[in-house]
Length: 452
Image: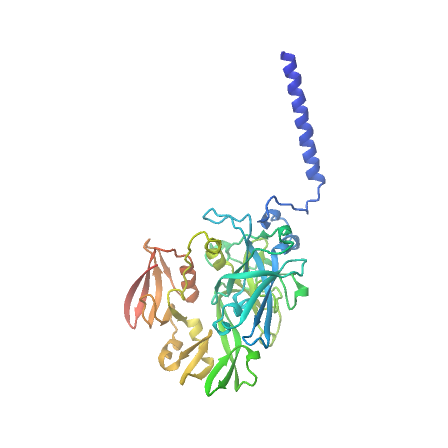
C-alpha cells in the first residue's frame, strides 16, 4: 500500500509538470501583442511598462482614443453646424469607483468647447447630437454628455455602444495622474517627454500620434481663447450670436474673449483643429491632460506653441458622475455656478475690457458668454488683487465680496489666488459639509458660511 501511494504521487507530479510546461510554452510562443481580456472592459495601463517607448505605448492606447462628432441643427433645420474633436476613455467595464461600483458604460474625457453646441444656452433651441468613432471604424456610436465645466474646458461623455457589433467592442480605459495641480513638487512636469493622440482636421486622420515634451516649467501660465461676436438688429431689437450661419448680414463683427485658461501647460507637440480633447500622456503611460489650444502662427511665428489643460478636474468628479449616470444614488458636484455665483479674478479682469457693446441700452463688456454693465462693474474690471470678486450674489454671499480663502470644518484653509483655485476646491466638496468663505467686503474683513 505504501508503494502504491508513492507511485500515485509520482504520476500526479508528472502530470503537474507537463501542465506547467505546456502553459509556459503557450505563453512563450503566443503573440504577446494579442490581448484578450476576460471582461468587456479593462485597464489599458496593464499592457504597458515603463521601459516601453512612447510609440509602443501609443499602439496600445489608440484603441482607447476616439473621435468626437457633434451635429447641431438649427431650429428651422435650414443648416447644420458640424464639428469634430477628440476624446479618451477614462472608465469602462472593469473600472471600479471609490464607492466599489463597477462601471457599466464607457466614459470619455474631452474638451468643453468640442461639445459646446450641446450645452451653450445660445444653442438651446438647436437639436444637437453627439457621437463617437472608434479606432479602425467609421461607425458612429451615440454618446451622451454627462458633465462639463466651461471655465476648465473639460467634459465627460458616455456611450453604451448600441448596435449590431456592440458586443464585440472591448474598450480599455486609461488611468489618470495629476502632475499639475494637487501634486508634490517633484511630481510636477519638468521638460518631460509626452505624447498626444487625437484627430486633427478631419476624421481620416483619426488617432494621429505626435511626440514632444513639456516646453515650460511654469505651471501658472494663463492664455485666452477668442470668439467672433456677430451683432445684428431684429425687429428693432439688438441681438448677438456666435453662430455665423444664423446671421445673413451682421451689422458688426467683433473679436471677444471666450475663455481665460489658467494653469495651462505649454507643450511642443504639434496640434491643430480637431486635436482638442485628445489625450496627453506622460512617458509612464499616464493620462495627464487634454490637448486644448494653440497660439495662432501670426502671434507665435511657429506652429509648436500649444497647450494642455490638466486632467485633474476629471479625476475629481469621475466616480460621482458614474454613480449619478448609472442611477446609483444622487450625487452632488459643486461649482461656482451651482452656488448661484458669478466671479471674476485679476487674470480675467485685466483682459475682459477689450470688447464693448451697447447691450440692453447700457454700455457693457462681453466675456465668457455674458454681458457685464460697465456702470455696475467698472471697478471689478480693474481688480488686481489675488482672490475672486463676486459679481452675482448667491448662497448668501453678496455682490462685491472678494473671496481670498476658503475652509471646511476640519480647519484646513485653502488660499484662493484665482478662479481655478475656487473651482478645484468646490469640486472636492461633498454634500453636508459647511464651507467658510473668507475675504473682505469693501475694506472690512468678512466670513460667510455656506452649508452644502
